[in-house]
Length: 163
Ligand SMILES: [Cu+2]
Image 1 (spheres, rainbow, N blue to C red):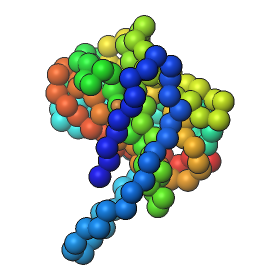
Image 2 (image 1 turned 120 degrees about the horizontal axis):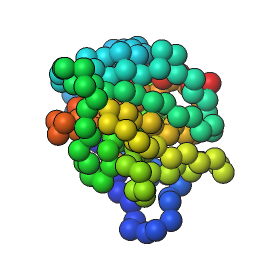
Image 3 (image 1 turned 135 degrees about the vertical axis):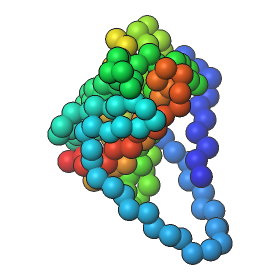
Image 4 (image 1 turned 30 degrees about the horizontal axis):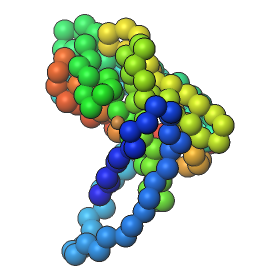
């Protein structure tokens, strides 16, 4: 369970988490992590990401994903909770968490900061999401990229190895 909240303030906020353990009954059924797929067809849209993303811990990286509709036209992203896309990362094993946004030009709240590095996610054209990736540690991360292309909520999963 994640509760993701931010204080209302003007300055960008460093990525941080507060933890508390929760007891859950029952036997967990592990799901396979999956692997990285550059091209994915989800909800009637095609998500095309780099063939080999190059991600390193504590280093700002931009990853551009192109989204087209069933007719092959660039999708129009409808703002959702203040951003054109939400990129939510979980570190496999430790469940470290990183959450960043892709914003329309001129919008605020899309800059991430870790250890002096910073990166900003932008969308400068229809169908194009440039995610600012800034992960705190190396290892395997699962990214859920959530957006509303043409008004429909779609989540695209990616498995990323950060060196
Ligand atoms: Cu978000």
